[in-house]
Image (cartoon, rainbow, N blue to C red):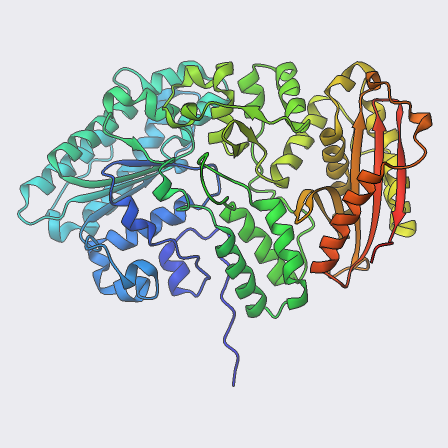
Length: 578
């Protein structure tokens, strides 16, 4: 019997029809359509690359009246196809994607770009639904608001004409670019007065009130533009923090487990490596919690699919665990802090593992661009940008190793720490002698040696393990995978590294417990001649946990004790305890 072709992995594929018709693997989120119908004009915010555009395409196919004959083919195997809402295939769908609008420092040029893009979409809509609307003339030289008004009048004038379902993807894409680049005057021109943007949303509001527009769905990243448009579009409801919609975009752990198993089966990947792969992606991509009381965390869907596609096609993990095309633009931090000095201090606090205190109410409120840059709103701003996520009811922190790595890299840039020169020989030697203590000595001399003595009040255990982790990933990611604060039954491991399954160091693992004392603590480094038995018991407990799960591993443990900028003691505990 011939084995069927494996399902393709939809990295950078955001067309629902293509995903279904061309045999891509699809994580079924369609049951959320039912919950979404509870809202008339919902605005759903998520950080970049969470699958917003594919979801908009899914809604378009579900509600489009002209796709009625394709409903079974597209949705028959999915949750919503087996139990539809009753509104399927009952609208004329107008879908606009504002991320395609080219930004300009000249407001008139931006308006022209907006007009050209949207008028083409309106013209295509008028042709597509001509059987319902009759002949509607879309004039390319007219403002988008006027052409949209023509369509809405045509809808109202025709008996039994379906209402519109308006989908606006990335509604704040170009307005956010003005904010992040400090073009405040242009942002104000865009969102105040009688600007073309505000006028467009006023027409949308009028269409909703007349019921020519039956439903609206809007995606974006930040609430600020919607807040600044409020007087002209006060019918929108930001639903990002609704419990019923928390898992609508992003993958749950159960969904990822099923995804991993299916990909391994489809592509004949070694099943004995599946659990290690599961732990790896969990550390790197899981951790987003968009509600303080959410029961489970979410994965960034696009970045996970980047990993899976590389793993499936190359039969090895990608060397760079962070998709280079979707790295978070942490230069937002500079804009928030109005300069490198404040940004560096903020990043150092985060790398120390202290997180950022927040008021849960600040996440649920809309706030305008002015408040976005107020110190009291830093936490909410970083939350919506996807840089920090809810860790508990009082604190935001990095969601995963991806963001911890990106922030460590940005710290190096702002602090002028050299990470490209002077390290090669240390890492080359490690690949031969596998002496992690010697490698840490190289990191201490080469990396920490660049940290000024007066800056050590911003250094702690978490800072050290995170920066050591980041440097190691730069030079050894071809051979090893790394983890920080990895969860085990007996606790959270500070640092670990594991040979990649396809490489020469397969089944080798190191687990390290770090302990840090400030210089002023009174701890005398010279008198530390042995590790604390409590620390030894802790790291050996992590080893037992790891061996219970992966008995084939050879695990070496160590305790590293650091005293301020004085130095460190590395205690290699060997591979005992197997």
